[in-house]
Image 1 (cartoon, chains in turn brown, purple):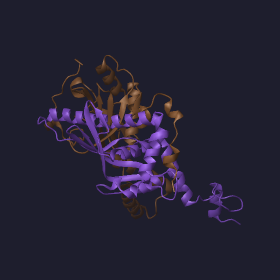
Image 2 (image 1 turned 180 degrees about the vertical axis):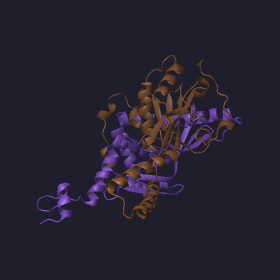
Image 3 (image 1 turned 45 degrees about the horizontal axis):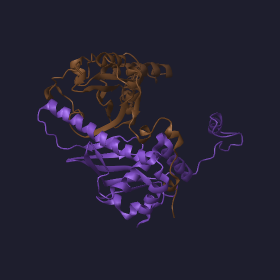
Image 4 (image 1 turned 120 degrees about the vertical axis):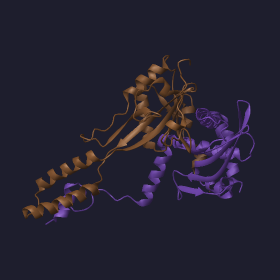
Length: 216
Length: 203
């Protein structure tokens, strides 16, 4: 455990409310299967780097972007030892950015343009003109708009191999699980009763009929 | 001559040449039963429901259910309790009240084939008291209440908080492991289930 460095992050650097530090605790629980690589630091840094967060390009058509970021600095994906390791834990976050121009904003801009077009040309714009204008308005509004960012913390206990995803949304939890399994090349087993059975034993079990069938 | 609306419905495959719907509209009750059945089987939720119901039965005695690292672990269900069934007239029921989980009403529901799906648990391990809401499908820990933190420095607090969450998770794991040991053992069908049924019938 010598390579793990204690961070010096303090409350002053914590701008956002982080459930990992305070507030309600809601965690989805997993266990890392198998042995961890000897060089945990390199393994995590390389793995998380593969699925590091990339901001949405406003010029693109992308409406959503997700990836891993440092816990304390959600715009940094270096994952230095000081930022990543805290005591026996690796701490980082899953960042989800969404950039979607509200339909009512496009509609309002379109209406204003149609009125101006009618006054100028004495006729209503054609279908093609409308489509072109709508695309232009969408691009213009998109360039002005900031993405909505959400952060979900992830903690990995390097001693017990427990992985906690600090989120309530099942979609987010599933996404983080799949991303971690893919980028770290590991298997994450959810801590549900079936996981406590010996391999293969679950297939031999079926619901207890006396408990599920109504007993009048 | 078919109207444009009828023609579009035909092209979408919603109606046949006779103008009748191609698929039967499913009965509302049948849809609900099928959803309840699917929820029971999805991710082997039935095993989680058996686990929480077994835990409710075991916890009524208020004695320590097991020892974790030589310290006794007691469990008390309190507050909201959600019961679900995979079939039957009632597929979901929720009760609320400090001692509601141990009420006759709940036993009656269990007797009728509903099992515990979501519960608020109070876990007392030695002198530490944890609270968490657990559901049968994922066994995630929700709205966890941790023992008061002893540390004052921000980083020490974080370490302690992480340790306590890991501890809470470990205690739930210990309970699940105890259930699985019994569920997978020979005494489940012969002793445990009859005892649980007797408890449910004791109204």
